[in-house]
Length: 190
Image (cartoon, rainbow, N blue to C red; front, top):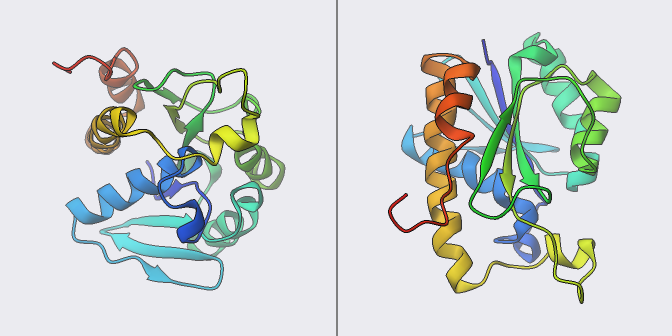
């Protein structure tokens, strides 16, 4: 049972709307849908959705493990009871994919920091941002903003990701996987 939902991103207006911050966008969508006001704290913005804690670490993304570890200790939450939502370079834009837990970070440094602090046994919802074009570094790509055409797709991804999280909570991760992992939100009828 999920007790803590963590959206990964970088804090501050400088990073708002960047590819790296799609985890924040999904968390904001869930908070908005369910009337949760996220309250600022020293290392994270948090709010309660019934018995579930919503969290946006306000450290830089690559240092997300410390505030998540602190929240887990404070609320007595096991790694298997958290859901981490983050961007994924290896998924094309318009795709999302649940992972039930275990394994590595896939190169995502924020996830790597979490694994180093709490272990790898936590479910993840990965949101595709695709690979950068040849003329951009990965760093510049993840910190870039979506084009207006991409924003239309991203809005569908954010809505569908929030739907998928709700399905996970009502049913289980396998039902959420079955529903979401095959979605292609680049199609206009999606």
